[in-house]
Length: 123
Image (cartoon, rainbow, N blue to C red; front, side, top):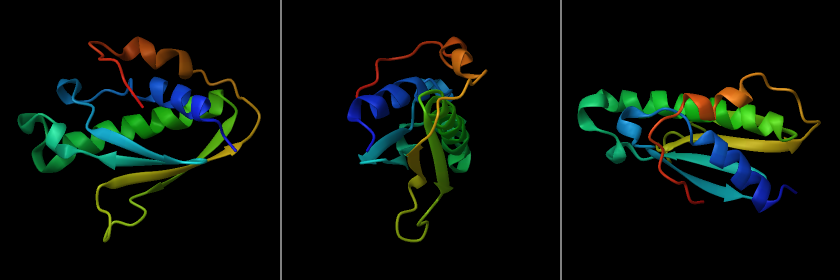
C-alpha cells in the first residue's frame, strides 16, 4: 500500500500544472493507491474557460505531472480518463498507482520551474 505521505508528495509537485489565472480547478479524492481527479470548472476564470476548455487543458497538465511525479517516486501511474462520465461527469481521471522502480524522469525537475504565482496546496 502507498503511504499518505508519498501521495501527498506526488500531488504537491503535480499541482504546479498551469491553469488559467492560476485557478487550479481541481480537487482530489484519494483511497489507498487510487487518486481521483475531480474537475471544479466553477473555479476557472470565465473568459478563459469557454465550454470548460480551460479546465480540461489544466487537467491534462495536472495528470501529466501526476504520472511524471509518480514515476520519479517509484510508482507506475495508470490513468483512466473520464472513467464514469455518465454518472460522475466531473471525475476527469482515476489514477491507480502501482509500486515499481523509481525512474529517471527528465521532466520532473522542470515541473516546479515552469510555475509562477503559486498558492500553497493542502491535501
